[in-house]
Amino acid sequence: MKYKVGFIGCGNMASAIIGGLKAHAGIDASEIIAADASEAAREKAKETLSICTTASNTEVSTQADVLFLSVKPQYYETVIAEIQPTLPAGQIIVTIAPGKTLAWLGERLGDVKIVRTMPNTPALVGEGITGVCKNNLVTEDEFAYVLKLLSSFGLAEAIPESLMDAVVSVSGSSPAYVFLFIEAMADAAVADGMPRAQAYKFAAQAVLGSAKMVLETGKHPAELKDMVCSPAGTTIEAVRVLEEKGFRGAVMDAMKACTAKAKGI
Image (cartoon, rainbow, N blue to C red; front, side, top):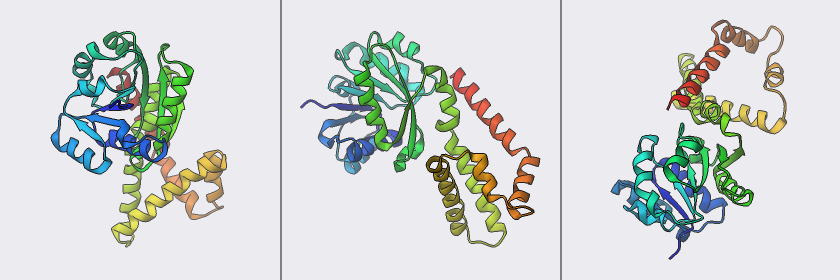
C-alpha cells in the first residue's frame, strides 16, 4: 500500500497535525503512517488516530509522498543520516524544528524538496498558527498543497526564512507566556476569593475572547484596549500599574531573548 503522508515521530505535535489532516484536509487514516522509537507512543497513536505505525523510520520515509520530521531538534542529525540514502525522488520533506535552516537541512538531505515550518502547541486544539517557508525545489503548487495540510489544524502563513526565528518567539514559544499570564490572573482572582477552577475559566476565556476581537474586528490592539479603559475607571488603573512595572518591556525583552536563542540553536 502506498501511504501519502508519513511522520517520523508521533508525539503530541505530530498527533495534533494528524488529527487536523484527518478532520479538515481530507486525508484518510489509511493514507498516513508514523514511526516512533517508543512503543508506548506508537500504540497510543494507533489507538487514538487509527493510523498505521511502525518502529522503522525508513519504512515511513520510503513510502511517504510528504514526510514530516516531527522529532526533537537534537535528533534531526541522526534521523536524517538514517533515512537520507533511501529517500524517494520527488518527496516533500516538512520539518518542524526551530533553528534547523533550509541550508542546514539541504546540506544533510541533499537535493530534495524541503518545507520548513514552525507550528505551536495550540494546534492540539485546532487553533495553531504555523510559519512556513520552502527551498527552491518545491513548486508553487506543491507549496500550496503543504499550506493546505498545515491549515488543517489552525492558520498557516508563508514567510521569508529570515523571519523564522521571530516566528519562534511570537508564536512557537509564546503560548508559554500566555499560560503564565493566565496563571497570574487566576492567582490574583483566587487571592480575591474566587475558587481556583473558576478563576482559570474566567482568565482563559478573557484571553480567548480578547484574541478573537483582535483577529475578527481588524482593530488595532491599542484601540481595543482604549475601548475598555473608561475615564478614572478600574481598567486604566490596572493598565497604569502594568506599565509602571514594565509589563510591555518585559514581554519584548523575553521575546528578544527567545529569538536570540532560536538563532543560536
